Length: 228
Image (cartoon, rainbow, N blue to C red; front, side, top):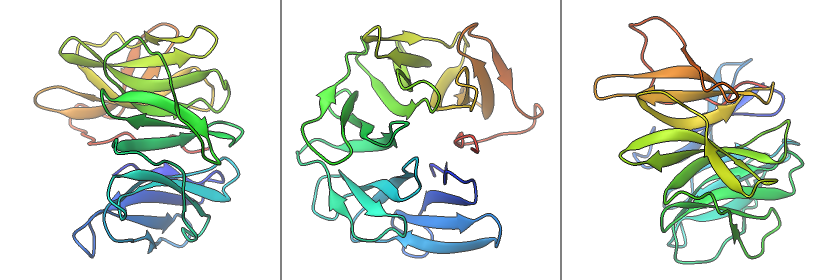
């Protein structure tokens, strides 16, 4: 689950139930094809994501009770707790300069931003009752892609700091979830799903047009962050 590239594209972090039967974080080396355990503490270990420098990793750990955001070093060691509340947190993502973190927190859920060093989280006023799975643009620090709920459907939206609100950018008839920015800062890859299938699409955030990846028989359970 939730595969995330290292900044240099040589490694992947992902969550798996392999070995223990509980969610742990693993690292996969693309060059050596080696999979190693990256984080395996008591409780849930999930949502790991490298900082832009590759020197730190944000991750969700629940060993002390409520799922909280921690920051470790590049080897998954020396975890430092960054949040403290009874609310469930998920999907941490770094700002392009590595100074802030955006994440999802209940109730709602809603998007919150805080300093990467800790402090009080600030809620982003998206204008939607449900906003989750944020991905901060690497080319435009003012934009965060996320999944929002519109009626009974899920769509892709982009929160713009300059506007102080989020705008739906997908126009598909199916659910759109798990957005991830491409390097051009205009397109997103996301998971599209309906009642019978799940597949990947590329979304043009300016036109709202979606293009399916792969053939009609190809299926995907989850969109991967685009390689650097």
